[in-house]
Image (cartoon, rainbow, N blue to C red; front, side, top):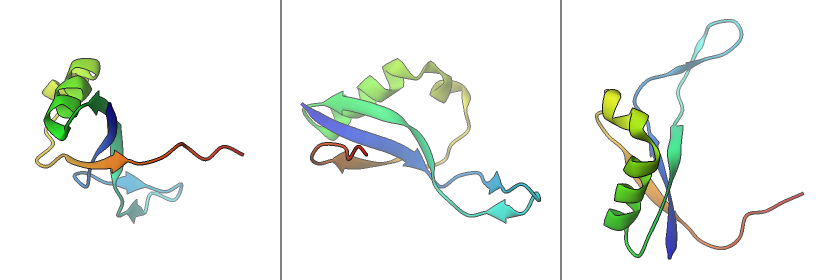
Length: 69
């Protein structure tokens, strides 16, 4: 089974002095044999997404094991 990270560039983040920072927001992870199944898994595990107003959600497939220190 493949793992995908789902993220968006919609919205913004502020630093401690309230200056806007352009970035991506990680929304969650989905598992599946392909990206469509992983997106369905992501939506099932993150019900809040249906109530948000994201225009664009993108994904990257995770390859390999996470690095731990």
